[in-house]
Length: 239
Image (cartoon, rainbow, N blue to C red; front, side, top):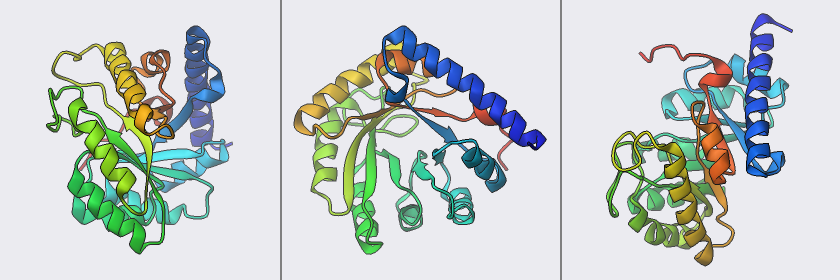
C-alpha cells in the first residue's frame, strides 16, 4: 500500500475500534451504526483510497469543493451526504450528486430541493438539522431549526415531491444549555427523534457525533456518526 493508504487504513482501524467499543458499552450491535467519513478539504485521491478500504458513505459541506470531487469519483460505489449549511442557489448542483442532504432547516429550502430533485428525476434523502441552541423554531448559530419547528418541517418534507424524510441530524452546540454537554445534547436529539417517528415511522436515521464525541453519540443511540479528522488527519486551513 502507499504511505497515504497505509495511514488511512490505520486511522480507520482506530475509529472502528472506538465505534465497536462504544457499541459494546451501550449494548448495541456494531452494524447498527454507520460510519460517514467527512472528506471536506481532502482530495478526490483520498476518497478513492477510502473506497478501496471499504468506506461507502462520505460527506462534504461546501458545494464548490464537493461537486467536482463527486464528479471525479462518480465511478465509485459511494453514498454522498451533504452536511453543510445549504444556500438555495447551490441546490441544483448539490442535487446532481448528493444522495442525502443532512442540513435541511427551513421550508424555503425544502421547496427548492423538491423542485431540483424532480427536475433531476431523483429521490433525495433528507435529514432535518435540529438546533439545540435555539429555544423555539428559530435557526441555530450553526444552522438547524429549533426543536419546536421539527414537526412542521418534517410534514413539509413528506408532502414534497422528490424528497424522502430519513430522520434528524444535529451538531453538538457551542452555546446554550447543551454547550460542552454532547451526551445530553444527543439524548435530547433522540427524544425528538422518538417524537418524529410517531408520525413518520420510517424517519429513523439519527446523525450525530464527530471525531471528538462519537462515543457519546453511539451511547445515546445515533445510527450514523460523521468522522473526519480522526480518519483523514488535521485539516489544512481553508483558503
